[in-house]
Length: 293
Picture 1 (tube, rainbow, N blue to C red):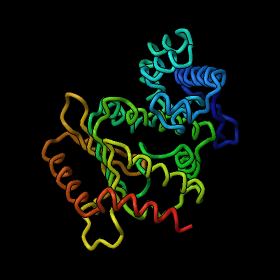
Picture 2 (picture 1 turned 90 degrees about the horizontal axis):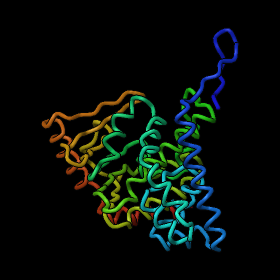
Picture 3 (picture 1 turned 135 degrees about the horizontal axis):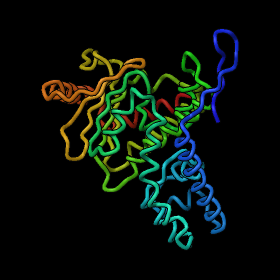
């Protein structure tokens, strides 16, 4: 199905999504429906199923709706747990190629970074304007894309949301890589999407911050020194490759591989972590903001 836009003369122009992209979306939705059917047949809630396989309720929900790419090992575990008789396990062989196609759902200027992220073993993210993509809830992501200017079509919004949720699979694999985030306090106080959406996002940050191997820190507004005045950036280490840095503004992006530039940004990130609240203090602040409503 394509999106419809108006030409300068007022005529309808239909723009089609790539055919293989539509097939990928259908594939993930079909797997999700199978999981939901088998779960309900077993008399389990999403929360109960998640607890049995070591995943959160939110992730199980996303997989069932086809907006989160299922890990092959999750499909194998669910196949045994739900007595699927190989129905889910056999699909695990097709997931990797489908995930590669799913990267096409990202804007072209972002795909270079995503190709590194898929194989990353270490990621560190400094955020000043929004919740980092890997930590966004589905509701937050949808609200952010819906407020884009110029406006995106409804179909493109859903495509981008699905792509963002699919990226988050790297946080669920095992062994888990090292991940940390330094988030400016202003981001936590800006209720994008409305308070209900924002509150769910803050609760998710608490969940992530309490997960082994993941560190969430907040850079408070009252600091008189700030090492990140140059803007947000990400440090990423793909397996078997040197560390890169990534920056973006508007629809432009840059992957940095020069060792000297990456070293400087690494040093800058270390200073930001020292200037930020400790992980424990950061979670306490998030809880405080939640309690202010």
